[in-house]
Image 1 (cartoon, rainbow, N blue to C red):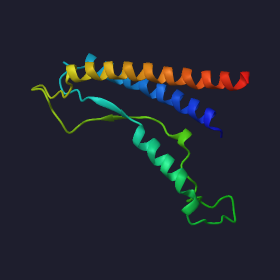
Image 2: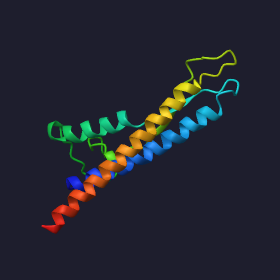
Image 3: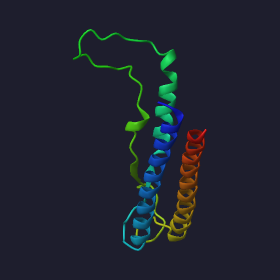
Length: 138
């Protein structure tokens, strides 16, 4: 896969994950006064990093041969396009007397950070397409 396609796909996935994070943070704020509600967050980058490392490590991997299609394939690299974001609930902490662990100020700052991140991602995607447009003109 060429770098343009890969970059655009990664930016698109990052924008989707950012939107999911925004929804989760908004849900946390909406439930900040609900007794025993536990805050959630989205985990994506660590799994994506693991997939990239797995893809890069395929050259040093011991190759197994499958003689039958029913054999389990254990040495195939994890494809980064199959990595999905996961909602993770923080069950370990309690910040309020009612058992709730949502800090509304932290979530509001988190939403602001996500908005700025989304703006940056859209600018990066615009840059990728402008580079392609320049290359096509020449």
